[in-house]
Amino acid sequence: MRPALLLSILCLTIGGLLLLSGCASAARPKAVPTASAAARPRVVGEVAVVDEEKRFVLIDLQSNLYVPPPGTELRTTNSAGDTARLKASPEQKRPFIAADIVDGDPAVGDEVLK
Image (tube, rainbow, N blue to C red; front, side, top):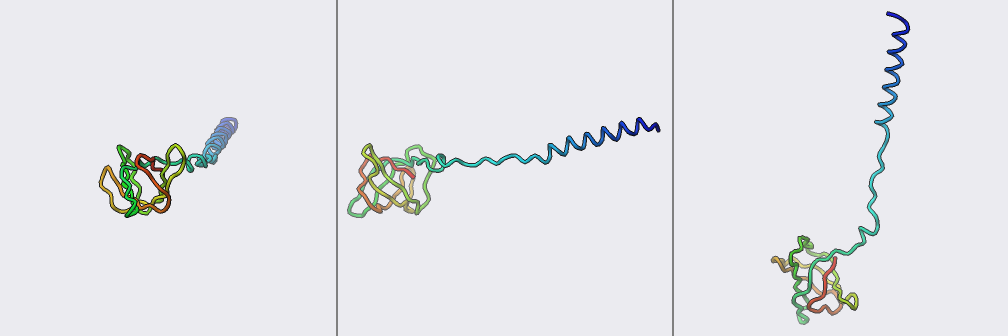
């Protein structure tokens, strides 16, 4: 074979390998979740019934697909601000779930957030 042809094939092969290996070694940066997305409260439902004597509430989930697992800390809020802290209990029958009142005074109609 001719030396010029061998040199051309060698140069093309080396150039191709350099181009392909350069693309393969480029690491893509991973998406980092922002603090605002993690800190954003999630609406669970609305307080439907308050039993002050037994210190629990029934939360109407309405059409919400999220159901907090038992033991999840929740809070209630209204236009004046936070009204109570709750703890989700195991009793759940759609569209309602029960939650124990940890502290505060929730009222019927308060929004429940996670």
